[in-house]
Length: 293
Image (cartoon, rainbow, N blue to C red; front, top):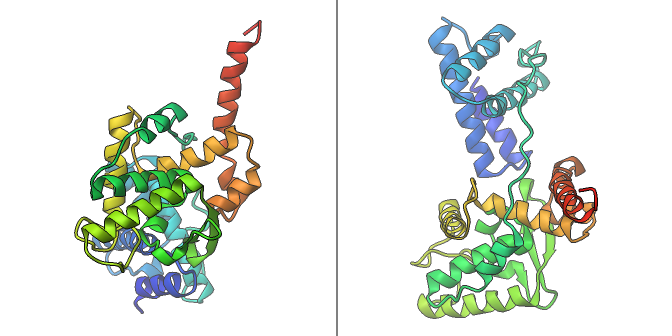
C-alpha cells in the first residue's frame, strides 16, 4: 500500500488542505521514510515503533534543526499515523505518546504605525510600483494570508458592498470589509494593469509584470523589499503584515472575536497570541505615564 500518497489524497479531498500544506506534509513524510529505510533493514512505515520516531527526532536535532522545526515534522507524523490508525492499517500509533519538544513562546512581530504612515507617503508611478503598493496595503488592511492574496480574483472584490471574498484554509470563505482608500487604490491598479498589459481579463487580481497569474514568491519578494527598506525588523515577510493588522486592530479597541473572524481563525486560541502585544504596549504606557513608573 502506498501510504503517503493515500494520506495526501485524504488531506486534499477531505480536509481540503492548501497546496503549500500538502507539499510540507509530503516533504516531512518522505524524509522520515528515507530515515527508516537507511537505518532499519526491511522496515516499512507500517512497522515503525516509538523508538524509531524518537531516533528520527534526535537526528533532526543533530542536523541543527530547532525544536519548533522538529515539532512541525512530528506533527506531520502524528497526523499521518492517526490517519493510518483510523483506516485500520496499523493497530497501534507509534507517535501517540511521543511528546513535543519545549519551545519558547515568540510574540508575533509587527510593524509600528509610524512605519506604515511612511509607506503610505510613497508615490507609485509605474505598474510594478502600484502593484507592490497594493500588495502591501491589501495585506495590511485586510490581514489575509499570502496564499489567499495569490488566489484572489477580480470578481472576489465587490465595490458595491466594499467587501472582499476570501477563500481561506480548507476552502472556507469569509468576507473582509475594505476602506474607501483601499478601494481607490484597487481601481487605480486595475486601470494601470489593464492599460500596461493591454488586457481586461486576468487569472488572478495580482499579476506579474507580464500579466501572468500571481505566485507566492512574487508576494514575498515584494513585501520583503518594501519592509526591508522601511524598517530593521528581524522578519520582513507577508505574515508580518497579518500580525500587524491584528495587533493594530486590538490596540485600537477591536473585539477579539471580530479579529478572529477577520483573520479566518477556527479557534480563538490562535487569535489570543495578539493580546500579549497589547499588554506589552499597556505596560509601556503605564511605565511612562504613571507617577511611580
